[in-house]
Length: 392
Ligand SMILES: Cc1ncc(COP(=O)(O)O)c(C=O)c1O
Image 1: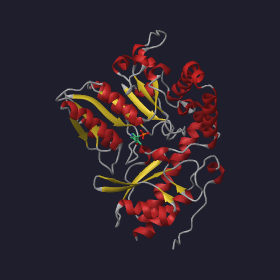
Image 2 (image 1 turned 30 degrees about the vertical axis):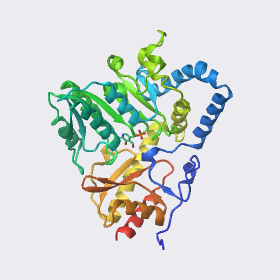
Image 3 (image 1 turned 30 degrees about the horizontal axis):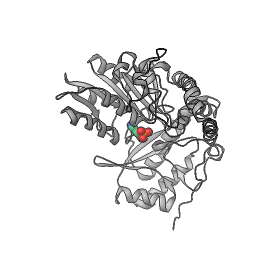
Image 4 (image 1 turned 135 degrees about the vertical axis):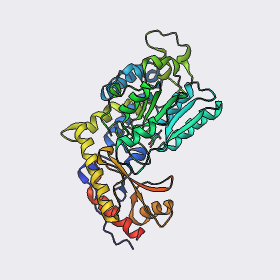
């Protein structure tokens, strides 16, 4: 019998989401969650498309995409012409890796915090030609950003052709000092592909300031756009090298009013473009939920994530594995579990209605919590007590 009392949601804000009120949803990070208002807007767009599919896709879509891209570019502090909408960050990483030519002996630098799918993509392109995947071992727990910088830069060699670095790491939820890393790598002649799957809406993202060769990010996580909305930024001088994963009409389009990059990425075959077209609405909607807009939203989620990990660490008597400043709206904690990770996850869900990832990472088992407006501190108290009950 579950004797830990289950708290209610943060009702004011949770009413904007469809989330099942019986479940404590502490995993915004994996796939995001889209507010009802945005889903309704998406539905309107879909109805408009289905009313006159040919007109919508051949005459209206280009202008609508241009507008959506302009609004996203303003949010990311970059040039709309350097952005392409893509369905997800996995596609963004694959697009760059599979467009570049590597040869035997080249090195592609990643870290041990890499997201599994993207590491697979790196291994795929490296194995095809006999290139080497070099893994920088960033410690976790760690004391400061310096630990990250030192681990990565010490692995650069004359053969390093590309670094794939996460802006926010997936298993460990760390914000990497990405501007410093991109700058130092550029000084050493290395281009960086930044995987910012979590970054938009999680950190104040300024792509011009970071100035990477390539940057991909999801809009369906912390911007709360519908699933299947992401972007790829490519620096202007690199755009001729980069081709979409699906070659389509843009490759020999006779139009000269826009770049080949634009023509190729704006049509990669028939698909539902409504997730992309909802991105400006998601930016606007989430940005007006609190009086201080996006900066208050990010700060509130960060404060809740910090409070949440403190609660868990106190109840389970765990040390904090990284400084607060390296975190955004998520936090990962190494836990010692007497039961396997999948059973722990299952028990949290089956016995306590808690949805949270338990991630086996190298020799550690990580509990990764997310904090979004619909969450409340009581939910993390409940999580801590539930963990204590399971783990003893
Ligand atoms: C660092 C990182 N890269 C890539 C992804 C993949 O995102 P998507 O499934 O939207 O492609 C994730 C997902 O959590 C991630 O954390």
